[in-house]
Length: 499
Image (cartoon, rainbow, N blue to C red):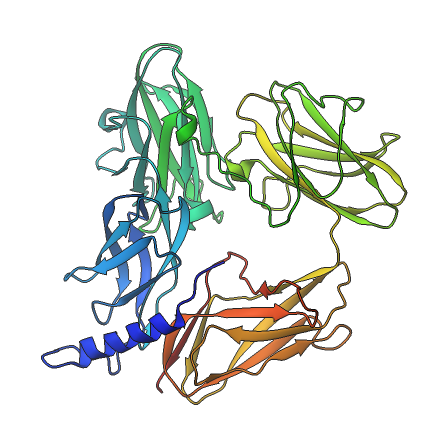
């Protein structure tokens, strides 16, 4: 859910016009092209600091205005085009945030900006060779870098004590939308590979390593194109950004594990280390429930069970890789006679399972969780939500940015995904816009040509640059409003300009 400040946005637009058209101004927005933002570097910063950020792209005028999905990051513009400062509040929420730049004639694409809670540094070149490795002075640390050219390989040096454990991971394709399938290796001082990983969070790698002896070790990172092409060599480019995080393996406060969040009210159950490791010992529970556990030793399995009703739909959602866990989870659902009802390892491009099935008979259902490779350990944790979903719907958009001209009609297509034969009538409307932007509410009716898609028709008599929401509501008091989303969950934006 993103914050929307239509009134503030109008004030900002007015301020921009005054800035550029005011007395003494030598720059005019009349006829100015729409700005383009292709890259932010570094693409993140530590909470409680102010970070100098370079914006790459095309900026017909400067300064612009900045919109962020959070008030905890304040953006300011320096005199030099493309130079920004991000002042990040000490209590800023760690994780992914968004930035969009704009002026009255248009807005840029939205770009990701990561907030962390550990010290950060910038990659120093040259570091292509083992002998040129950049030093990591202290752990934990996040390093912002870029595979700037084809074949680029970056090295970082860290000194470890005997028996010391570290965790190293890359954020790139998964959070930064970089076109990179990154890889990470851990080398000894002579350059011999001791450990490596290719994929963990989607295409982003993560590895753990325990030093057998004290001394200098190297972290090597490189990448291939996320969209495979005819080459088999390392790739590179100005937009091949990454954030490498290296932390102590025993430092829980700096762990990459992120807390699971479920958008339903449910009971939360914690499995003890040696609890529910066989079908006979399966933990019984009532739905809905979130079960938190760990595959503590290699080959271990965890079992829970619940009473199912014939004809009812059920869903098991598991979070592990997306939380930072080392678990490559596999889930098997079976009945009381051990007959398999459903099974899954990965849900499409998601490395975590998401099973849906309909019960064919009354009786207990068993849910088994294990590691696909039969591995295990203290960091093989997971959170699993088990529900009996009711018919529902989602609103989907193909783009996060809409362009309009004052006085002309603009169409916004909204797709409706009706799950489990949802038959309700949905009122779909545009929200968060100022007076003067007209967009009649439309209804999606089951069984009609509007069941799967409607086209909103918007016309504006005023200029506007700002966030919007497209929502769905049911004619039932107390039901939840649904917000239309893109596949990558980017915040929506509307640009209305003069012809």
